[in-house]
Length: 90
Image 1 (cartoon, rainbow, N blue to C red):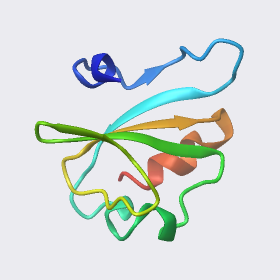
Image 2 (image 1 turned 30 degrees about the vertical axis):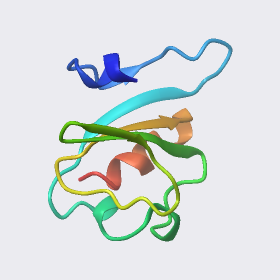
Image 3 (image 1 turned 90 degrees about the vertical axis):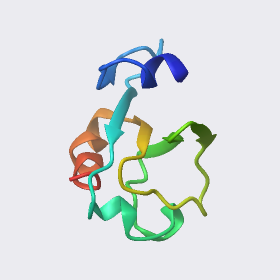
């Protein structure tokens, strides 16, 4: 998780035995993901926000987590969800 956050990697296929991908996003101001708690924004069911780095703090995302502009966010997603997930960060 920390390694992913310290590089310019945006997609990593590293989940052996799974089609899931790991994606990293830097949240833009006004992005839909910043509009409420993760459990309330309708995030795709075939994806999950796994971790967030905010400044010098890293933490596991939960349903009550609110994503802020400029957070670095790691998402685990099935290929069918990647386009849907991307819309939450633009």
